[in-house]
Picture (tube, rainbow, N blue to C red):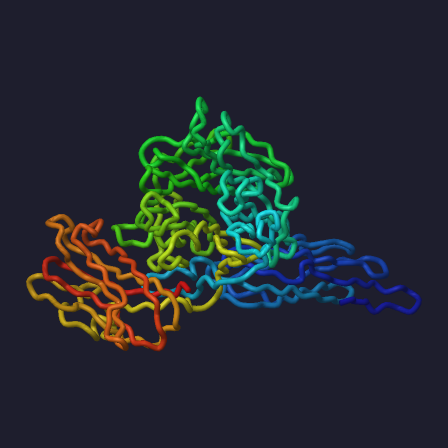
Length: 584
């Protein structure tokens, strides 16, 4: 809009115009966003123009720097939101005053933070919605030319990084140079890029690797260079990756897996440095890998899995000098799930982290599995969320997993959390699929609290037990064998595949190894048990601590289902809830 001052005849009036760039943006609640306000002289002799605004979102501050000037000049409008700023869309009207007035607008959408997502008794006010994007097709990786080979599309171990306002580089594992494309080996690192904000991606250099394997015999990474992660600090791209050389050739040095570093000035041409973190003893005796690199408060943090040849757990190394990182004193910082029936009982790995200003927590996406030895042969791999205030002590989300394969192996795994242009995403291994944090209650999750003001599942449907603290409990003095919880006869769940968590605690986990409870999912329509699991006393990892017992089933809609817990009358048991999540 152009403003003209009223002046005597014969004198060119002072005129100026305002514009905003960008004219709109998203911002995660608790973060800040900026727009450049251009004040342009259109005619006459310049005069001072003062900037003001209306429409700033509630509990946010809107400021200009500078707040006035003589056209032509530019000012930075900063919108700083807080944890109290409501999610929603707002239009800020910017007015320039001085010898007339002119206006422009800046539209912002405040998106949810991960603090909105977190909850203890049900979903919060945000959840991860499943979203599609366009992945490039690699003819070289699809020898049959029909797109159904496993690596036709770059979706394995993806790691996005923001390069500019609209550009994302996404690194991934490729088998470009593998001789057998159907059963490939010798992974390397490729690059795809998006210039439309992540809606679609293109192969860089026709899919040729940007980071290749080392010497097949003497290179520490001669077998594989995989699991990339990249951070940009002061214009330098830093990549960490998992490398190993297990080819077993005669007289060749063998290494079980370490973490290396490569650097670049443009994200396309890389120079390898070598190993920066070596595997050690204890939880990382077997190997270390699936690293992610972050830069917080002037320090590099590299999180990685340690594999002891049976289980994978998460630790990290950190330091101001990327070439001299120190392992954290208290590794591992995140253990596998409690007990043999948790969804992540054998694997926690590929942990990537972002800071959430609104809630004051770091949030991690990580993969989990019930696969002993961390193989893809079964294990129902999936991913979940955890949070921490100090990067050392992590709390897992009670309603994990967010995604999970059904009665199968790898897939819906290798997550990577990523904040881009005011939105929070989790990418994963699945063609053209990612997850975007969205406002609303979780439409994939249904929670049945055991106790809920007289309307809890166990309060309404039980033969044994009573309200005890925050849950429903049965004990050997007051109760006998029977269902301590059954129902709720739900017939409204959409048809599909589901993962179910029974959340229970015990008083003593080492007196014997007898069955203490049995969980089953009962189809009332057919009068049959869909799935059943008996829980032994020592399946509980701790006493008086809730832990999840995970099962899966296929819901045939509109059948009526019960989620039942049978009590064997040999221990104190308390149940907090049953959570049911659709996964397919």
